[in-house]
Length: 332
Length: 286
Image (cartoon, rainbow over all chains, first blue to last red; front, side, top):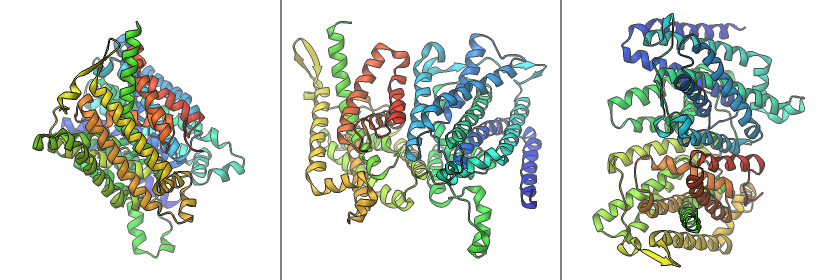
C-alpha cells in the first residue's frame, strides 16, 4: 500500500469519524438528513461499482432500492415480521431479494452495451415501477405502504439518533467491503473491462460473467439501502422507484466522482441536501438541482473527487501531473 | 365483454397511439440520428401545452396556439442542442444527465410561469361533439387526433424518403461517420432533427393537452411511454414509430381495462425483451 493511498484512507476515516461524532449533537432535522444521505450514499456506492468501476451506466438502480424497501414494508404490515430482532433477518432478505432481482434482470441487461444498456436498465426500472404503481393489492398502489414504528430489540430504533448509529454502521461496513472488492483481483478485472473489454476477453476473462456478478453485487447493496430507507422514511411508495430516483443516483456518482466510492457518498449528501432541505427553504430549489446537473456535466468531468487532481494538474506540466481521472466513456 | 367493449377500447387505443406517435416520432429520429437518450422530451411535450394555453388565454385562438407552441418549443430545443448538447460530443451518459438537468430547469420554469394547477386546453366546439357510426359514438376529438397523426406521418415520410434533406438524415442514422465522409454536415442534421423532435413533441402537447390535461409531472409521466414506443418500433425509423405507437396505445388501453394490476408491466416488459433480443427494435435499421 502506497503512502498516498494510506493518507487517503486516513482522510476518509477521519471524515467518517467527524460525521459520527458531530451528527448526534446537531438538530433533530440534521440527524434525519444525514441518515438519509448515508442511505443514498450506499445506493450511490452500489451504482459506482457498475458505473465507475465496470463502465456500466445503469438507469434503473432505484429498482433494487425499491425491492428492499417494498419487501420490508410488506413483511412488516402483512406478517408483522421484522419488528423485533427479526429486523436483521429482513436486512438479509432485502439484500437477497434485490440481488436475485438483479440476477434476473442481468440476464437481459448485461449483453447490451453503451446507449442500449442505458435503455434496457431504464425499461427494467420502469417494470418495477409499473408493478409498484399498479399492483394495488400488494403494494398499495399510488398511496404506498405506511410502516409501523421502527423495530425494537433491546435498543429502540424509533429514536432517530439510535437509527442514525445503525445506518452509519451499515454505511461504514458497505464502504469497507466495497473498497475491499474494488481492490481485489475481481475489482481490477472490472476496471480492465471498463477500459477495454475486448482486451480482457482476449486475455481469457469471461467478461460477461464478471459484469453479471458486479451487477448482482450492486443490486444487493441497493437492496440494503432499500431496507434502511423504508425504516428511515416510514413510507414506501412508487415515488421511491421512479425514474428520477435512478437518475439522481447517477448524478450522485458523477457529481462526486465515478470510480472513487466515497465520491458517490458525497454526491448523495449534496443531492439529499438539495431535495430535502433546500426544497423546504425556497420554492425555486429545482433551478439549483437542474443547475447542478448541467454544471456538473459541462464543467466537472471528474466530479468533485477529481478536483484536487485537476487543480494540481493545472499547476504542473501535464506530463508530470499524469492523466486526470475522468468519467468512463460508455460509447461502444 | 361484448363487441361494444372491444370496438371502443380499440378505438381509444388507436387514438392514444396517434398522440404517442406525435411524441415518439421525434424522439425516435433524435435517438436514431444523435444516439441521445433525451430525457427532456417529455418537457417539450409539457411546454408545448403550456405555451398553447398562454396563446389561447391572450388571443382566444386555439388554431393559432398550435403552430406558435410548436415553433416556440422548437426554438428552445434548438438552443439547447447548440449551446450544451453539441459541445459535449458523443457520450451517452453525460448527454442523458444533461437532458435531465434541463428537464428539471424546464419543470421549475413551468411551475413559476403557469403554476401548479391541473389545466385544460379546450378545443373548439366542433371537436367536442361525437360522430355516430354504426350505433357507436366516437368522440370527434379522438378522430381529429388520429387525423393529425396520419397527416404528420405522411409529411414526415415524404420528407424522409423523397427529399435531399431526408436522404441526409437517413444516411446519418445508418452510419454517421460514413455520412460525414461523403460530405454531409451531420452537425446541422442533428440540429435540425433535435429542433424537429421538440416541434413534434410540443405539437403532441397541444393536441394531447385537451385529452390528458396539462399539469406539473406530466413530462416525466409521459416520457417512459414514449421510450417504450421508440424501443419497440426501433430507433430512427418512422414506420417503427408508427407501429410502435399503435402497439403501445392498444397495449396500454387493453392492459388497463383487462389486467389493471400489471398494466404498466405489460408495456415495459416487451420493451425489455425487444432490447434483449433485437436491440434495433421491430423496424430498426441494422
